[in-house]
Structures are given as structure tokens and as C-alpha cells.
Amino acid sequence: MAIENVVIIGSGPAGWSAAIYAARAQLDPLVFEGAITEENRLAGTLPLGQLSLTTEVENYAGFPAGNVEHYLADALSADRAEPLLYALKQRRKHAAHSHQEAITGPELMELMRQQALNFGTRVETDDIVRVDFKSRPFKLLASSGQSVEARTVIVATGARANYLGLASEENYKNRGVSACAVCDGALPRFRNKPLVVVGGGDSAVEEATYLAKFASVVHLVHRRDQLRASKIMVERAISNPKIQINWNTAVDEIVGNDKDGVTGARLVDTTGKGTREVEASGVFMAIGHTPNTRFLEGQLQLNDQGYVVWKEPFRTITSRPGVFAAGDVADDYYRQAVTSAGTGCMAALDAERYLAHAP
Ligand code: NAP
Image (cartoon, rainbow, N blue to C red):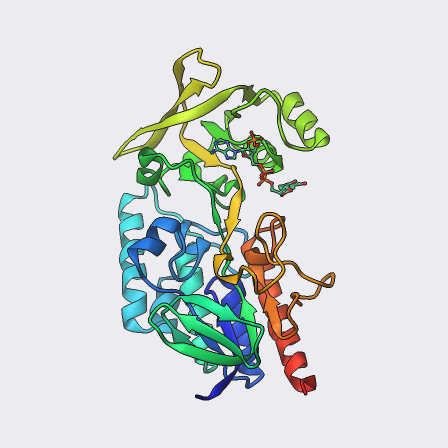
């Protein structure tokens, strides 16, 4: 069995950026982009990562709104471009007025993937389910049964947003239900409309504060009578006239219809004082993320929440020399596409330098 120089696990912005850099450094990288299975669909871990679950991406530098139709048709193979072009046509059909569109998450991810392929990256549409980082070369086992040996590995498996687990929530994902205010908050459907944010941590308060810039009112829904968020964030929320904090409250149903998507939420008092409905055009989940690291347990140092630990500041070095981590799998703080791409680049450079000095 040939020993790979670099195996990259994961296919979000971190994985593809690592692949572009590793391929251009002539390391002949192999990417495991994940398997296309119902289990992965339900978990939000299909190939192309969290961005493939979002709509417009307006904050990734280099992609101002414009007509991406010709670019997609030109840059991608016909079979990969076709579903995107179909989706684009459908969006335009239903758009209230014609306007320039921002690139979407799936489009951006397909372009990143293609860019990595253009430099010779090889791709397996398979999940890595087990690793042995204690032996050298490292050993990786895929869900298909395929096994691979590698001198270096870049873990870029990302994280998945936590959701409440309601059927109605699944039904309205991308039609008003979101787990990323920064990604989706400025979309026209949320402007000057009431919104709901669920959670009581820093993310929830930050998202509520961010959304308050666009929304008519933000209902912050928290299950307890005290926020977990830091003091300064709490003060910011309490003093914002557009944020209404609903203490001891949980969302027990998301209300909507096929035409408008989300129109409201049914709230239940967690101390037993009954339910009520609020009007809302969006419900934003901010109840934490779960890193995709189960397959790494016992192999790499993980923090209390299961994120891979970087052993040196501003280096993608993990507890195992030769294994690097990039993107949300090692980041419980910034969690942006652009920061993921940046750390993907760093991991490829770290792997290249490691290989140059490896015994
Ligand atoms: P977090 O601190 O774990 O907070 C999650 C919140 O969601 C908690 O309030 C929790 O309620 C609630 N929650 C969890 N499961 C729930 C469920 N099933 N139903 C209803 N509510 C549920 O997560 P985070 O806010 O994403 O923050 C993660 C880390 O990033 C933290 O260390 C945070 O400080 C940091 N961060 C910092 C900033 C900043 O400083 N600007 C911004 C964002 C994040 P309970 O409180 O009842 O457990």
C-alpha cells in the first residue's frame, strides 16, 4: 500500500483550502470528503460541510453579489454545475424582484472543491471512521472498509450546530430556521420583522444583539432565569430596547406554512405557566455546537467540549506530531468560513514543513 503524504479529513472551507495549498506544494493530497448517507444528512455532516446547508454567503471576501451563473457553468463539471444552476433558476423564479445575488454556500463549496481538484487533489466520497495515530505511518479506516496509511493528517471535520430536535424545525431549515445569525441575519426575509433567538450563552446574546440591527424586535428565549453569557454581554442585551428576554421559556413548536416558511414560534413556560405564540419570521438556534470528533477519541487531545486542542498558539499542531487540525473542529470561538479557510491554509503549510523535517 502506498503511503500518502497528506490525508485531509473533511470537506468544508478548511479541508479544501488545505488541499489547494498541499496540492500546489506537490504533496499529492487525498481528501476524504465524507459519505453521502441518510445518517450524515440527518446529522448535518454530508460532504461540503455546514456551508452547504446555508443560503447566501455575503461575508466571504472575494465574492460580491453578481451573476455567478456563467462562472459556475464554466468552472465546474456539467454534472456538479447542473443542480446549482437549477437551484439558481428556481430562486430567480420565486424572487420578488430581480437583483444581484450573493454567492450561496453550496456554490462557494463546489468552487472550492473544484479549485482543489484543478491542482491534482484526489477525493474519496467516504467517511473516516477510525484512526490509529499511535503507529507510524498513521492508519485510517474508511466506512467502505478502505484503509489508508499517511505520513501526515489534517483533521478538518468541522462541527455541527445543535438544534432542538423538533420536526417543525427540520421542516423550516433555510426557510426561517437558522443556526447562524451572522450568515443569515441580513437576508431580506428577516429585515424589520420580529425574530426569535434560542439560548442563553454568549452566542445567543451576540446573535440577538446582531439581529436587533435588522429586526423589528428580537425575542431571546432562554430556558432558565439566568443567562450563561458573560456579564458585559448580558448588560448589552438587557439595555437593548429591541431585545425582549423571555425567561424560563422554551420553544416547543415552530409555526409556519409552505408559502412563507416560518411565521412564528410556540413558547412554553418551563415553570408550568402554559404556552403562548409569538409572531416571528425567523428562529435562530444558539444552543451550542458539537465538533465532529468522535472518531478521534483516545487519539488526540480534545478539550472538555470535544474540540481538538491546538498545542501552540497560532499553529495547527495537535497533541500528535504530524497530525494537524483546521477549521471549526478546533475552533469553538470564531466559527466563520473565512477563518476556517485560513486555518486550512495554515495546516497545509504546517504539514509541508513537518514533512520537510521528518526523520
Ligand atoms: P454555551 O455557552 O454552551 O451556551 C449554550 C446555551 O444554550 C446555554 O444557555 C444553554 O442553556 C442553552 N441550551 C443548550 N441546550 C439547549 C436546549 N436543548 N434547549 C434550550 N436551550 C439550550 O454555547 P455558546 O453560547 O455557543 O458559547 C460557546 C463558547 O464560545 C463559550 O465559551 C462562549 O463564551 C464563547 N463565545 C464567546 C463570544 C464572545 O465572547 N463574544 C461569543 C460567542 C461564543 P443553559 O444555560 O440552561 O445550559
